[in-house]
Amino acid sequence: MREIHAYLNFDGNCREAMTFYQQCLGGELHVMTFGEGQPDSPPETKDRVIHARLTKERAMLMASDTMPGMPFRQGTNVWLSLDCESAEEVDSLYAALAEGGNGTMPPHDSFWGARFAMLTDRFGTNWMFNHEKAEQH
Image 1 (cartoon, rainbow, N blue to C red):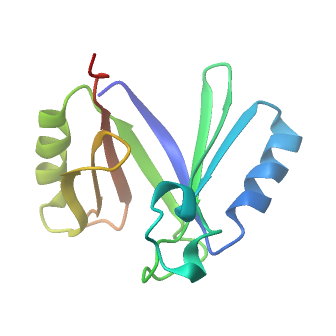
Image 2: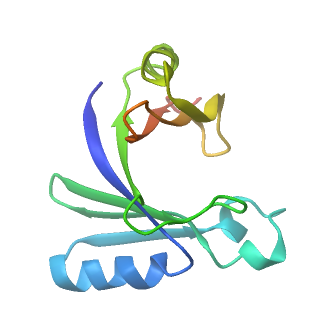
């Protein structure tokens, strides 16, 4: 594992929150909506944020609006995102931390070109695992 990042969830106001954090903290903000990332997403989700990233020097804060069908409860909207070194590490960390927990999204190859998974461990901590695949030339 290379790094652990905080990942926040919002219920439709992610862009507003991340813009506010950028105004307060500075840095560069990148935002992608469900409509941009998944063109076949339902119309009511097109403008919701599927991924936002605020970076400044070595600091990074990531966020999204809740995915369609996922419940939102303020106070439990923080995830720990692990930047993994390999697809195999995604799979093994997911298997280890899922023991006694709830697998939200099993390891899979995502549309953004990464191996990705999500779970809530037996202690109620939310985890994301991500391994960016090397670009194919």
